[in-house]
Image 1 (cartoon, rainbow, N blue to C red):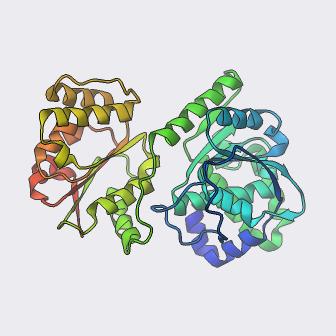
Image 2 (cartoon, one colour):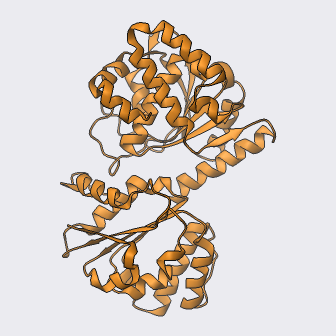
Image 3 (cartoon, rainbow, N blue to C red):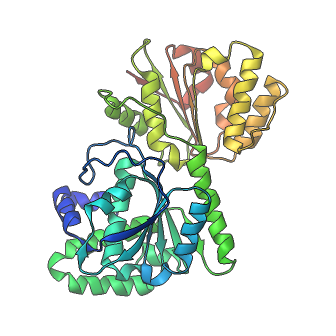
Length: 393
C-alpha cells in the first residue's frame, strides 16, 4: 500500500502533526560545505515550494542506521562522495530522547538525492523510520530522487517486512498499540522503498567496488542534468505542468508517448516544458532539453551540431563527431534505442526537424517520453502519428 493512499485514510493533518512530534535526535553535522548557503529562511515542513522552482542546497542526504553502518560502509560512502565534490549531508551523532529537529527535516527537503542505507537493524529505529517517511514525502511532493541501498539484506525483506524487519515491526505495534496508525505509515514506507530501484550489496564483490558503482550513478545524476531556471512567480505554471505530466503517464513502461504543446507566441510553452522537465527528468536513464530547434536547424551544420549535442549529452562523450545528417540519425537510433530517455524539443515547426533528431518514434526504448513545443501542430503530426497526445494552452 503506497504512503499516499494511506495518508488518504489517516489524514494529512495528522501526518504533519506526527512529523512535528516524532522522537529522534538532534544532530551534529558532518558535511562538505554546500556551494551556497544563502537561503536559510525559516521554513515549515513541506511548504508550497513546488518541484519546478525548488532549489537544492545539498546534492545528497545520507539516511542510515548508525548502529549498523556508521563506522564502516556509510562513512566510506560519505568520504567517497566528498572526494568527488558531491555535497553531502551525514548525521554524525543521534541522541536518544530528543525530537528530530525542524532543521533536519528541512535539510532533507533541500537535498536533491536521498540515499537510504537499509541494513539489518534499520527497522528497529523509530527515528530511521520517521526519517524514511519524510524522505518519501519529499520524493512525492518535490521530485527528490530516492536511491535505496540494500546492505547485506534482500530487498524483499524490506518490501514484505520479513525476517528481522518483520520482527521489529511487530515489536513497534506492541509499543504503539495506542497509535497503530504510525506503524501502518512505517509499513507503507518500507513497502514503497523496497520497490524502488537502487543498489543491492550481498558481500560478493569488494565493498570498495560496490561504493564506486554508487558514486558513478550519483555522479551521472548530479552532473548530467541540471534543473532549468524558471521565474519564481509564474501564475498557473504548476497546474499546467501537472496536466502534461498526466498526459505523459511516466508510470507506464509499455508505450512511447509524445505530448505536444501548441499555441501562440508568448503564452509560455517553453516555460511549461521546462517545468515538466524539472519535475520528471530524474526518473529516466537520460534526459535533455534541446532549445530553439527551429532556429538552430537552418543549416546542415546546425543540424549536425544538434545531433552531436544530443549524442554527447546522453552518452557522456564530448568528443563524438557526426559526419553527415543521415549518419547522425542512424547513430542516434543505434546508441539510444536501449535507453529510457526524456527528450524535450523546444520550438519545432517542421516534421523534418524531428526526423533529423529522432528518425522514427517507434524505435525508442519502452518508457521513453518526447515532449515537443510548437505553434503549428499540423506541421509535426504526420511524423508523430498515433504516439501524439495534444495539450493546447
